[in-house]
Figure 1 (tube, rainbow, N blue to C red):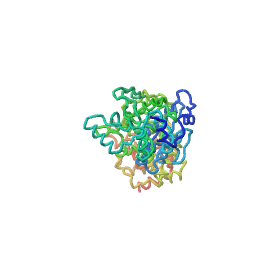
Figure 2 (cartoon, one colour; figure 1 turned 120 degrees about the horizontal axis):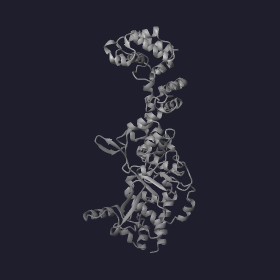
Figure 3 (spheres, one colour; figure 1 turned 45 degrees about the vertical axis):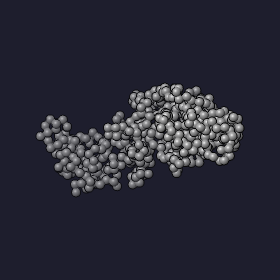
Figure 4 (cartoon, one colour; figure 1 turned 90 degrees about the horizontal axis):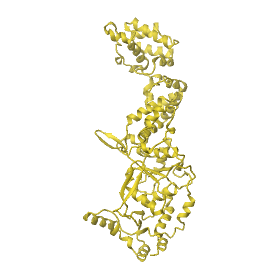
Length: 549
């Protein structure tokens, strides 16, 4: 058969060759060892936590090596694509401060010299590579109908043979040129199939950066490369795009692991360098006594919007993801407190092959630690941005009292062990609403929360009359609290009360809590002295007066 003639028959409008695209997309001018990685989602919905984790790792290894990370959109399956799906992916990345070096930056825009980064715009490129395969007797048109494929499957099932289009079942493989020409002239639909050189009885070693060397049977399936509309399948687009974009490392979910023999075979057929693969195990979740994959449908924390709505800092999420990606990260961070995530070098050898459990409590604890290390001004601006979208009332107060609010956030922050009161911006209001008169409601004060508080009015009145002075320093203030405790029959030291509880009405902690609840309605707050200094004399007296009536 004249395969050049067949190729021209099948692809009459393709006049370029592979060499043309190799010159258009040359090898990248990057340092030795630089990694070129990518994230290539389909526009089928929001980016979920598992996808973000994979993209985060891919970007990290590229950044560590002064390489390139790009975003490519696999939009070849129109049936699965959703409206605004591309923009949704881009917005999810933008909201997570996830910057790309190249790729799609909007529905209509992209940056970089190796595009288009939208697969639906690359049809001519795919067909050029497909034409090359036909010219070299490595692919052929297949005219099998859906009914034909169903019949083949039934025969294979009846004979308990492997399922698929291969060997003696691949009937279109043996069509003559005249038969093919006639079918094409009759407008019969066809797909392009690989003429696989594989032998299922032989093994192929597929190296993986995390799972190690894995053996699979060679691929002998004549897989579909181009669908009947000329659009590539994932397998073929994967080969063409990753070669021309000069991808060196491919990170993807381990559901693609079984496809690795096919992909390696395709690279070998073209004699292209084979990228290094890393198949990432899914993010799992403990559900009762069982463990299952984190679900977009069942688990709200799977959606990135969950973190925006709750106000969990993006950087805290990345810190947590790195703990799931490299087992040595937490230890490294503890020993390098002055360094950040950007200073840590990702290591595939420290990545679990079996995946990790998603632990929201651990993430929140990391977030709490992260927030405690921010400056008061940084906390203010983060809460301001979050509340602008999710709590307009609180946002207006923050804008009305910027300097005052920053002072509130600064309570017990500049010390060796700063307070860790909240793990998300959504928790801030509940933690310090009492500092704003507009939010404080003295009617909700419950002295039943305080131990030994039966005579709270007498204690408050005595404090106001004899001990309260807004200008006292902290030592003087605390000394007066002790004096007040003695005067009303409470122990001035906790150990005195513990030794002889029957001698006292209560202890100094009870006195402090009576004052604390009076001013905040809470039993647990940051330093009471600092709270009182910020509230000021008039507001304190007003609150005490309303309580004591």
